Length: 116
Image 1 (cartoon, rainbow, N blue to C red):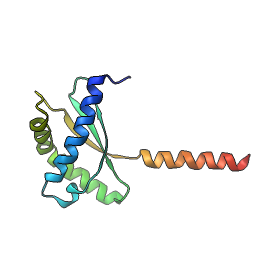
Image 2: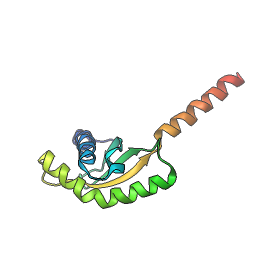
Image 3: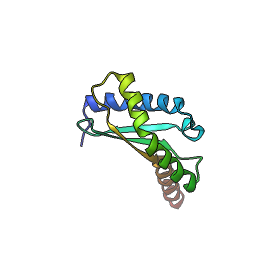
């Protein structure tokens, strides 16, 4: 489904605001996270926030997601105050695996190229 301009603008703003909000937290693990993308659902009720996972082990990722879930209301409140919106989407955090998928695709293309 195509995203409207409103959703794209909201996603862009949320990406910046969530990054800023993470920097204000007292938790060192959360302060160093990098937001790679935000996907706002239609109606602005939910937003999936994608975090770079390249330097974290699977155990660290689980721990970080647990801390992010606890910090979500604080992050949402920061975004609400900073944006001036009437409501802020509920934030859901996930680790971004698009870089891994891209590398696998490139490896497949290299294998195909080598066979020719």
